[in-house]
Image 1 (cartoon, rainbow, N blue to C red):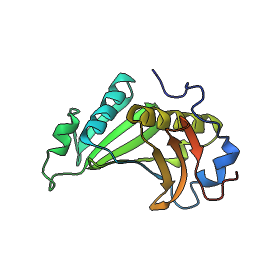
Image 2 (tube, rainbow, N blue to C red; image 1 turned 45 degrees about the vertical axis):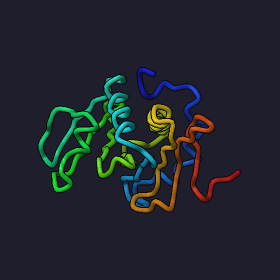
Image 3 (cartoon, helix red, strand yellow; image 1 turned 60 degrees about the vertical axis):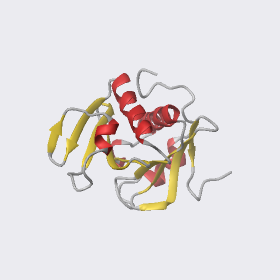
Image 4 (cartoon, rainbow, N blue to C red; image 1 turned 135 degrees about the horizontal axis):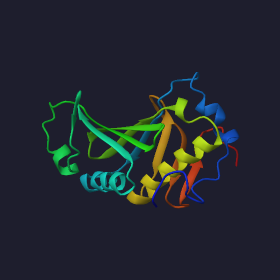
Length: 170
């Protein structure tokens, strides 16, 4: 896969399926996205995916912009060190902010204001699918601050993004 936004079969979701969950005025603009059950090797595979797809990437420790390290270097840092964030742009006007809190889980945010309409939903689904396929793991998007309320996610068993919201039909 060479780019986001051009993956056939990544989703069968329509904007109408998710529009109420993507309203930035309703419950926050930065839904939480996570990949549970990861390792340092999974993080490295993610970093490799960023590079291979030539996505815009920036590595930060606190406010300092630094060269992109290996995942092993990120997770061998002192726990008292600055917060580690990776700013990733799979397309120029979509930002995903990854935070290296733990090797055990990949956490990131996306901004709902950048994800309005069918074309933008397709780009998000392609991005989540690329991450999930690379890692062979589910990628779950939940309401901001509410992990108990999943909205959608990449399901590796069906190889696509599916609606997970409790009010989803059938």
